Image 1 (cartoon, rainbow, N blue to C red):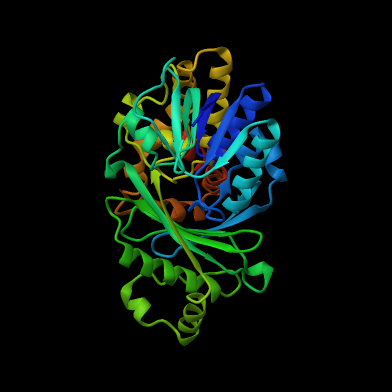
Image 2 (cartoon, one colour):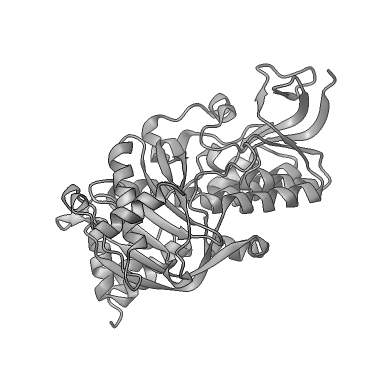
Amino acid sequence: MKSEVFDLLVIGAGPAGSFAAEHLARAGKRVALFDGRPPREAKACGGGVTTKALKAWPHLLKAAGRSIEQVEMYSPNGRRIHLQLAEPFAIYSRRHFDSYLRRRAQEAGAQVFAGRVSVQNEKATGGVWTVKGKNGERWSGRVLVAADGANSHVAKRLAGALPPSEMEVAFGYRAPLPKDERDAVTVIAFLPHWSGYAWAFPRLDHLSFGIATTQNNFDHKSLDALLWSFMTSYYTAGDGRIELSWTEKEQDGMSERRAEVEAKLRLSVERYAARIPGLSVETWEKRRAAGKDWALLGDAAGFADPVTGEGIYYALRSAELFAEAYLRGDVSSYEKSWRADFGDELRRAAKMRDRFYGTFLGAPFTERMIQFAHCHRGIRNVLGELIAGEQGYIDLKSKLARRAFLPL
C-alpha cells in the first residue's frame, strides 16, 4: 500500500494537536492530524479554560462555553469562601471544545484521519517517520508530533516513561444541571486527608463533577465515596451553600433527601477517568520534549500544572511555540522556547505541590489559606487570580504576604 508523505504527522487531535495543525496548515504546510479518540468520547477533564488563555486566544470564546465570574471554595473541614472574580474564566464541554479546535485545523487545510495509529519502529528510507492504521493504511512525514495525552506511547518511546509518582488521576461524572439555573454554582473543594480537590463545573448542558489526586495515593473506593457525598451535597444545598459531609460517620447519617438524590443520580450520570502528568522538579530539568525531527506537546510532554492539573493553557501555548520553531526551520529550538516561556512556572509549581497539600501552623495549608482569606481581602483577590490563571506560582508567596497587609 502506497504511503502518502506529509510535512508533519500530528498524533492526537486534542487542543495541542489541533492548534499546532491549524497554525502549520495556515502557513502552507502539509499536515496529517490523527484523531484516535472514539466518536463522542470526551477526555476526562473539568474543561476549565483560564482567563490567561482567553486573553491570549480570544477566538476560544467562539466555542460553546459557560463564563464563570464566581466560585465557591471549600476547605478540607468544610469552611466556605465566596470568590468574586475580577475577570471571568470559561468552562467547556471537552467534546465541543475539542471539536471546535479540530474543525479550525481542518478548515485551515490539515487533513484529519480518524482512528488510532502506531509509529513504525524504524524510519523509512530518507529519514521520514511512518505511522500505520489498524487496517494497514500508512502515512509518512518528515516530523513526528505527539499530542496524544499523558499515556502517549510515542512520548514513552522518544522521551521515556514517567513513573506512577509523577502521574495524577482525575475521575468523575457528567450529571444533569439543577432545574434552577441559579443553583448551578461553580465549586472547588479541597479534600480531607488527600492531596487534591473535588470540583463541580457547570457547562451549558450538564454538570462536570470530579476529583483530581496523585496516582500513588489513589484509592478508588474511598475517593468515589467522597465524590458521591460531594455530589449529593451539591444538589441538596440551600442558597448555594453546600453542607459537606466528608467523614464516614457523617456519610452514614445521610439524610433521606440525599439518599433519594443519589439513587436518581446513579441512573443518569456518565462516568469518566484519565491520567494527568504531575512532573517532579528533577524530571522538568532533564526530560526533553523535542529533537531535530520530533516534538511532544501538551500532556504528552508533561505540560500540566502539578498543583491543579490544569493543562489546556500549556497545551495551546506549547502548540504555538512548536509551530514557531518549525517555521523557523529548527524543530529542536522548541525545547529552548518552552523552557523560556513557561518552564520555570511549572518547575515552581512542582516545588510547591507538597507544600500546597501539606500542613501549615498545625492544619492543612489549604485550610489555613481559606481561613486567612476570610480575614484578608487581598488574599481573597490572589486566590481569585490563581483560579483564573492570572496569578503564577513564581511570585505567589511574596504577593500573598503583601496582600495580607492591605486594608480589610
